[in-house]
Image 1 (cartoon, rainbow, N blue to C red):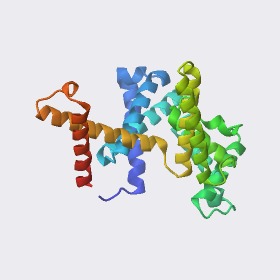
Image 2 (image 1 turned 120 degrees about the horizontal axis):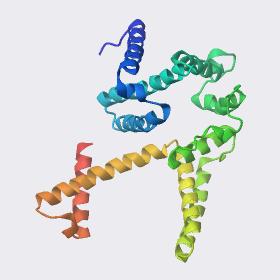
Image 3 (image 1 turned 180 degrees about the horizontal axis):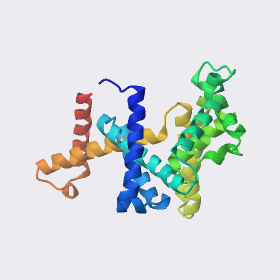
Image 4 (image 1 turned 60 degrees about the vertical axis):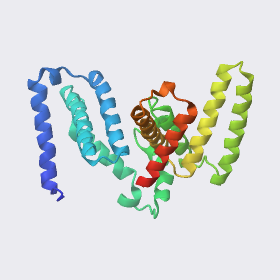
Length: 267
């Protein structure tokens, strides 16, 4: 597929802004939208994009990127109506930030590897005029807990608070698992059990980070794998004229193993 020229891309973006201006003026639904009313839809569209990305679904990635882009432009449109900022301000502020945080491209700093770039990223953010005052201040409160844990650990690593050797993390994982097992045996303090379970999960996420494995992506791959295999079990049970609730665990395990074998054949 032939890609568009820079002029065509700019024209397409201008067309989007024109369409949005027209909708904001003439469509009753678009006209009544606010930052607050759009927020739930933005979250939904973002998750739909994430789903398409995980499935490497090119057609839906293109579609969902458009939906997310619409929301970005919509918020900028609302900002311009209030006299606060417009889409040019959004773009210029982003460019200024990117230039400032890449002194190895736009300045005299030398960085030969991605690791060297990341090493100074958090320090650069804190040096910004309106940047984060603390290392962890930039982690949004509303982030899902799994992603938040990863980002907290990654930001701490950016200022040197990390394991010297990644292999050492496994001792911490085993330690947290042992403490969790001991608390679960007591069965008298749900709050303490929850705390130890959280510590154990946090240590596992840390291990994944050290081995460059994104825990959210890893878990979602497993979710999708389970869905596929369980769907196979349901389909085969239905073909046999059986309901899952009437089958034994051994029978379902047999179908589960068949699902795994079918997956291996397709790889």
